[in-house]
Each structure stands twice: as C-alpha cells, then as structure tokens.
Amino acid sequence: MRIDPIRLAVLLLAVARCGGPGSDSSPVARSATERTSALVHVVGDDSVFAPNRAGIGRTVTASGSIDTRGPFFQSLGANGRACVSCHVAAEGWTITPEGMQRRFEASGGLDPVFRPNDGSTSPLADVSSVEARRSAYALLLRKAVIRVGLPIPPNAEFELTAVDDPYGYASSNELSLFRRPLPAANLRFLSAVMWDGRETLAGMSIDQDLAHQSNDATQGHAQKPDPLSDVQREQIVEFEKGTFFAQALDFEAGPLDQRGATGGPVNLSEAAFHLGINDTLGADPAGAPFDPVAMRLFSAWSGLSGGSLADARAAVARGEALFDGKAIAISGVRGLNDALGVPVIQGTCTTCHNAPDVGDHSVALPLDLGLTDASRRTADMPLYTLRNKATGETYRTTDPGRALITGKWKDLSRFKGPILRGLAARAPYFHDGSAATLLDAVNFYDTRFAIGFSEQEKADLVAFLRSL
Image (cartoon, rainbow, N blue to C red; front, side):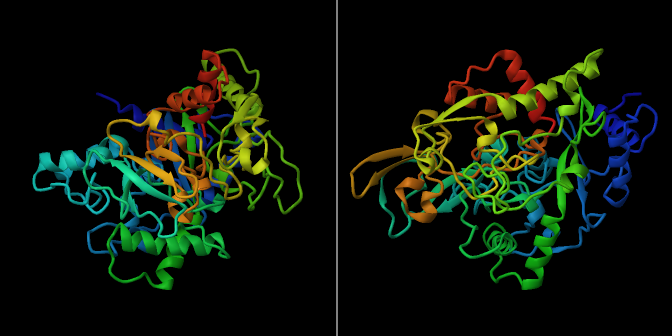
C-alpha cells in the first residue's frame, strides 16, 4: 500500500499537536496545544492544512471555524470569481504556480481564476482554445502573478517615453504590472494595503482601508458592476483579520511550537502588534526604542545537538540569529536611506522586517530594493522608460510601483515589505515572483548588499525562513 507522505505528515502533525505519542512534553508545547482547542483543527482538511515542500502550514481562526458561506467565498461579480479564487487556504491564502497548473489542467483553463481582464498577459489575448489559453495565462501558470493595469497619473512628475511590452498592450493609459496576490491571512499585522499602498488611504484606519480594498477587488478582479454593501465589506474584513496562517511543521525540524519554540499559527494569533511597533525610524507611539532582535521564535533551539531533529532545530535557531544580527551595510534603498539622510545604514534584516515575530515593516514605508531595475528584467516582463519632466533624467523599470499612485519621481519602484509568516507555502517570492525559492531570495539580498553569506549561513537562513 502506497502512503501519501503529505497526508502522513498531516496526521503526524495532528498527533503531535494533540499531545499523543512522540509529542514534546515541554510546558510551552503543552500550553500551545491546550490553546488550539478553541481554534480550527481538522485533520486532512485542505482549508486548514497547507502541505508544501518544506512541511505543513496551518490556518487558525479567532472564531474557531472557517465559514465558507460568507462573502469572501461567494461569487459576487460577473465572471465567476470570489476572493477565494486568488486567496487559497491550501496555498498560504494566495496562489501558487502548482495550484494554477492543477486548476488549468482540471478545467482546460476555464476555472474562474483564468479571466483575461487581469489573469492573462493582455486583456486582448486569444483565449479561444486550450492551447491559446495556456499561452495567454503563461505568467499566471509560471509565476502566479496577476496583471494590474494602472495609468500614468495625470499630474505625474514623469512621463512614459518608451514601452517594451512582449504582449503588445501596455501604454501610458494602462501599464501592465505583473504582481503576486498578497496573502489574505495575518492582516491584523498590516501597516499598508497592497504592494504599492494604493489602498492605504489618508486619514483612514487599516479596517477602513481593507473594506475599501475588498470592494475595489470585487469590482475590478471579479468585475462586479455595483459596489459591495457595507455589511459585505465588514464581513470580509472581519474574516481576514481573524484568520492566521503560519508554518506548523517542518519536515526536518518537526512541529514548530515544541521544545520551547513559539512558531506556528496559534502563537502568531497572540502576537502583540500596533502600528509603529519596534519601528526603525523611531515612530513607535509607545515610545519604545527599536530593537533589532525582532524575531524570537526559535531561540530556545539554539545550541541543540544529538541527532537529526536537534541538528535541524539548531539550524533554524542559527538562521533566526542571522536574521536578527548579521550586519548589513544598507545603501541605495529609495525610501530608507533618503528618509534617514544617510548613504549607508549599518543594519540587519530586521531594519526593514521589524514587526516582532511577524516580519513586515510596522509603518507604511515602501522601499526600492532594485528588484525592478532594467538589469534584472526578464524577457517575459514589460520594460518602461520614464523621464523626469523637470530634470530630464530617465529611468527604466519593469514596474514603477508606488509612483503610479503618487505621481512622485521619488516613489519609483517602491513597494511595501510583506508579512513573512507562512513563506514556505507561497513560493515564488517578491512582488513579481522573480525569486523561485527562498534560497533565490537570500541570494538576491546577499548580492544586492554584498553581505558575504557563507553557504552554511544561507542554508541556516533558509531553514529559518521556511519555518515561519
């Protein structure tokens, strides 16, 4: 009899979480297990567990169940889509290439996620046959990116002077921007809504921003002709803010909330957060100074030895210590170096990923890391040449980012940092899906900032990141 290793891992996780044979008996592990009684816990239910290449991710909710009758799961527009079309529990509340490929093959490319208004490389793409759809939705299938169409703002400080769009559509009236759908879980920890912050509205709370975003997404992605009701918006926001997702089990390190560790979604659901918490720039309203040791999930595993499980846990702890403490000379980051007025900042990963045990930036501070530079452009991405109207300076980018919202030259290619919990379930990484693996993401930072990670340090960092 063939045993499915993923299902076996789910069963083992359930046994460990319930305190059965082989479970850790530490007080921290027991208290975490006790707290799960009020949270979602259904063995084998894909709405709860998210098997992935590193282990098992898991969803818990404040309400104790996932009610699929709510508007998040309903098709409210004109093209068959619902929020859950692009925010799938088993894929870390976003979508993945593997998930897209399965849905394409099962439906011949007719599943509601495959719609030309934003799923295809161009809204004019041929979708008349299976093979035509396979080509039209190539980026969705390969990188799980959605096409966002935005114009150059009318009063922008720059103009579009050249377009190299392999799909023959983009213009100043509508640039084609290919971006990963952000996860619809862990939203209680948000400081900005959307990659470019376009739903972070002046004078509004995060709840109001999310309510506005839910309507824009439904009218845009689902092509609903009329707005959502206030009740529908409130229900969507309540569901999103009460849903928590994180890696629960690592195939090498085992359950991530045992032997004193505080990983997993239950502990995440109890994490302290407020806007500005532990802010690098000193904006914490509580007045607390910035602490670079922002991630403290796995310090109890430091120095473990004596077998493969202990060695794997020690690697996770070493990776966390690197994330908190490895010195990085941060330079040329638009939105950070200029905000502090210094060309080089002596920092760590947590200079930008400063929300404690969560990993996003705790204030809305979009940054340009160089991800959209022309030098990194691949043949499947458009390239835009922009000119500063005042200075004549030109800039080439695959995505102008925040600048398409503000019209400001200084905002070119600036994007928010995402919440890091649940990374293992949602490859590929960065806003454009340009890093296929966590190692690719680590290598990008290593090269970008000339950090000089050793191969062991890279492996340890990946072990930590995949355990989030």
